[in-house]
Image (cartoon, rainbow, N blue to C red; front, side, top):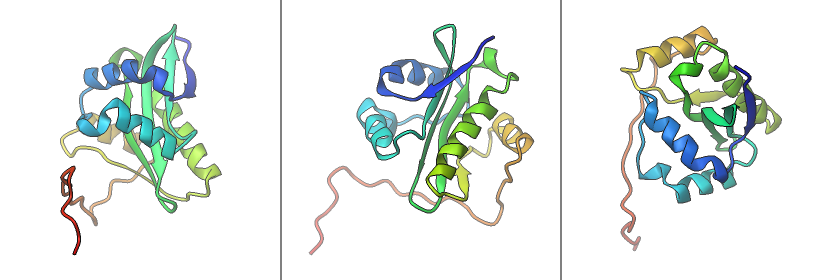
Length: 147
């Protein structure tokens, strides 16, 4: 299987979204709509990548930063393309892009029940954190006005 890594552009969105739907451990929401992904890619140019084999998208990763820390989102590899270094290559491309931007640390969000994903990240040198947790709040599309 010949794998090529390319920048993630919106022309690949439908194929990437279909891949995300096929892969367990990816939490999809309205935040993954075409408009939101297009905005994310525009805010983080040259940071997200896809893996292609024979014209098919077999892997994808969203990557960006806030100016001090990098973040990987939705790194997924098609089940038939796993164990061929696709995930590692995608993660490495993202890390190189972050490094070029001067970012020295990267985080990835992994569901606690995603044992296969956690095992993968550990196997490629990432360290699970037990000293911090994630706390979230949804923001309504029409936030209340401040006084």
